[in-house]
Structure formats: C-alpha cells, structure tokens
Image 1 (cartoon, rainbow, N blue to C red):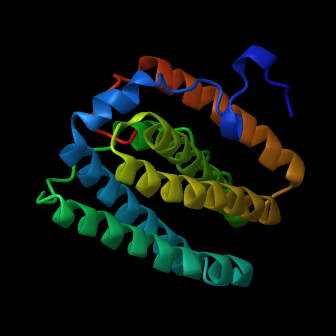
Image 2 (cartoon, rainbow, N blue to C red):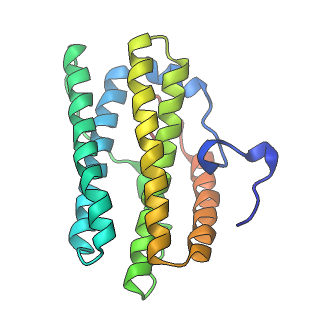
Length: 203
C-alpha cells in the first residue's frame, strides 16, 4: 500500500480532513444535521440488507452484517428520539452528493465476489468519513449532551469501518483490497476538495 505523506495522515486513513469549523456550522443547523444523520443510519441498514439479499451464499457476510442491520436501525431510532426530545421533526430526505460521487468509483469486475468487495470498500469509506464527522461534533460543539451523543456514534462507525474492510479482504485478495482502499482514499480526497462544505449535512 502506498504510504501517505506524514503531513496528510489523518484518522482512519482519510487524506483530507474536514475543517473543524464544519462542526460549528452544523451546530447552527442541528435540526437539519439530525435529520440527515437519521437518513444516513437508515440507508446504512438498508445497504446491509441489500448485501445480505444479493450475496446470501456468503455465510460470513450474512453472519457479520445481520447484527449491523439491527444496530444501524437502532441508531436511526436513537436519532429520531433525539429529534423528539428537542421538539424537532424529521425533515425531508435530501440527495447525498458525497455518497453518489463515491459510488461512481466502484468498479464492476467480472468476478461476482470482487464486485462484492468493491461495495464493501465503498461502504467502509462512507463509515470512515461519518466517523470523522461524528468525532468533530463530539469535540467542537457546545452542547455537552450532543457531544456525548456523537461520541457514541463515532465509536460505532469506527467499528463498522474496520469490519467492512476485513470482510472485503475475505472476498478478494489482501493485495487488491489494500490497493483499492488507497485508490478510494485518493478519489475521496478529490471529492472532498470539490464538495461544498455544508453545515446541514453529515457528508
């Protein structure tokens, strides 16, 4: 795997870190952030269900992702409860430009299990970026309860990222997993450079 220069290293291997001021923007749009977060958790659960349905013959995948479905749906309900506590309503789901751009980078190799590995690597990167954003919220917003709230999500997303990468390496070679992970990181850095920084979105 190509070594990332020391000055570019960041948590989870992400090349381009989020400007910490994003957390302050997010705090000013907390209803929108919680709404977007809720839908992120919902989509994560549905993505895992889709993988289980499509690759049901992969017993390790089914076994590992089944509890993640439950956990992600539990996260969705937790965010809904937080909205309720604050007297806020779940807003309208918006298009996730970041995820859509990242999915464009997925290759479609002829081998079925390599296609699975591509999806797992892509999902792992989404979890890694979510983890990084949750970390910023847990550190830099002023609301102490929300700091604790997002610290728990940060820990969960870090675990999901590692699990998905490990699963990917089961369905293609370790060498290919490492190469594609680095290529995804490089591509994601370009997305982040060109993406408008918005305080009403998780990504």
